Amino acid sequence: MVEIKKILCCVDLSDFSPAVADYAVSLAQRFEADVLFAYVAPSLSQYVGFHVPPSSIDNFVNEIVSGAEGAMNKFIAEHCRGVSCQGRIITGYAAEEILALAAAEDFDLIVMGTHGRKGIDRILFGSVAEKVVKSARCPVLTIRPSEAKQD
Image (tube, rainbow, N blue to C red; front, top):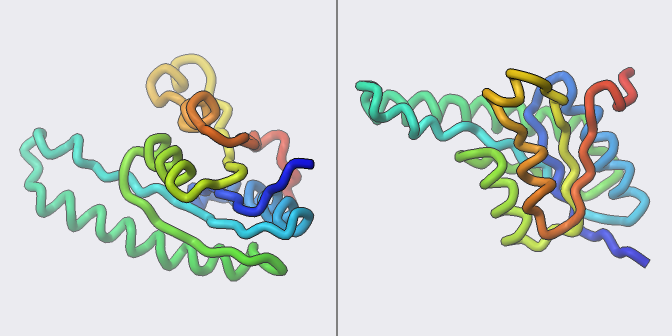
């Protein structure tokens, strides 16, 4: 039988994140697993060459992280009842950071949303979920907004 003890649930703290969290929490209850909710804040380091002082970028990223920490604490309080869970804010490129975290901490399952972009949007923005699915060492459950149950 498959044993799931550690679930990594990646959220962007948008209106869709509670639906993704519902899947992670339900699985955690079923398997008596721990959940780590992770949000990856952009590093914005790619903009240093555009005549933007690095200190301005660092200050902006710090503000994003600070706001995300507060939002994550509120999110966990509202959506993580009855299971052991924590929140973590990471800075960097989303797919790379998710994959590194999942490998470093040996997660059994990754749960994440996908925006379901198509056409030019997908070409321009790519798909974090697709990159994670293709490269993760553990199974990945992706939830599309249209497939999630909305309250």
